[in-house]
Length: 317
Image (cartoon, rainbow, N blue to C red; front, side, top):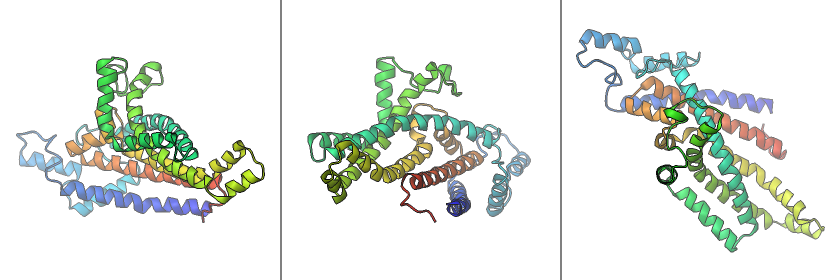
């Protein structure tokens, strides 16, 4: 297990380099100058040259990438072009807010998905199964940003029950663990939970239905085991695959919530990434994508280790 863990940690290095290189190339291929937003309209050629030298944009692209990688290895992700603040601080603050949103969406989506999928699989090919399947397909198919806008119209504009935007009162971007801040979390968390709920429900439904049709289940019933005991065996057999799916979905929640965070003005990594793209803030864009990629790898590593603990038949060598 230790050798497997060390090998997976070593794999993080090429993944981080590959993600950084692709992001770096795509940003420089895009038209426009990243310094236009901060450079004075009447800037002289000397001022422009000084600013490019300050951000390292006067060097060849391979040199720029090499210098950025060397600094990133020490935890220095540079300074944001648009704000002038350290990128590491900006990203860590946004990551904390995204973790709060992803955790809330997981607490809503995963238990509901597991429950619906288990019920649908147990009552396979019945009206309950068809109803749950239709609900799951709808959740996966409906664009979550559209659903977010509908929820805002209904619960914020029409009913006035919940706030529409921000992470706290007065447009605050600082999260706090109190009832007022939790009200700002409800709508984005529910919106973000719909897709993983549908995916988990469909996966678990297929797993449970397949396990219940296997011969060992009939053997358990033949030995006189009650429904509760049989269901425990079904859960244990379905748990590793269900955990893997939930791990992937958690990774997507951490890195794929850009539209939801933009709709609700939630100050997380998705919102930060959106601003960095439109402002062509290269250091901020690269730093955010690197942290998101490493987070996704870390989540998958934890899921792999958890699978081994749940099912000893899965060997990691």
